[in-house]
Length: 173
Image (cartoon, rainbow, N blue to C red):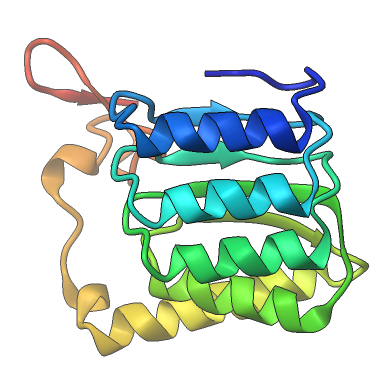
């Protein structure tokens, strides 16, 4: 569902959060970029993320969630095991502590992509998050697992970044 650049504001984000709480389990991608959402709307969405089990992508770029909204999302990531992508650039996140919490939650969760713009520390945040994620994977023994054959491109003999399973059961890049 892409509602980007509609003036949803906090009230719209809260209504969407209620929809998620009510069991909108089919929703897997939600884009709310540039929707004038502030920390109240982000907090409501964060509360929904704690129990919603099908949302894999949440785009909140170009809003005004600030440090309080980012802190609420960081807290929610600890309980959510399905979100894979979280986009937060250009949200007025300035507190390095919030950035560290986001990085820690990124590494301890299934989150594969965290796009956050914390002052000028974006590259450092991503590097720290990726290092923590690698460390966590190693501690769980996940680095020792071989890549499944269906994720190896038969032509390039490299791991496919975005494989799609075709109707014949084979993975394609």
